[in-house]
Length: 109
Image (tube, rainbow, N blue to C red; front, top):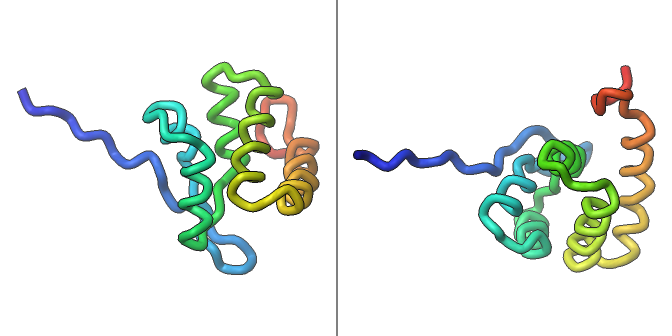
C-alpha cells in the first residue's frame, strides 16, 4: 500500500506592511512534529519572515491548550529568537488583537 505524504504544515498566508512573508501552520509543525518552537521561530526569523501568531493561538485553542500555556510558550520562543524588548513590543500588538476578537474567537468586525 502506498504511503500517503502529508503536505507541509507551513504556508505563506500574507505580507506584513514592510513586505515580509507571514507564515502560518507553525503550531501544527511544533505540536505534531515535536520541533522546538524556539528553533522554528528562529529559523522563520532568519529567513526574513514572521510567524502568524493569531493563527498559532487559534490552533492551540483548538488543540485544547490553556491560554496561560500558549502565552508562556510564545513568550519563550519570541524572547529566545528576538529578545525581551522585541517581546514587549510584540505583546502590545498581540493584546490589541486579543481584545478585538469576538466571543466566537474570530476577529471583531
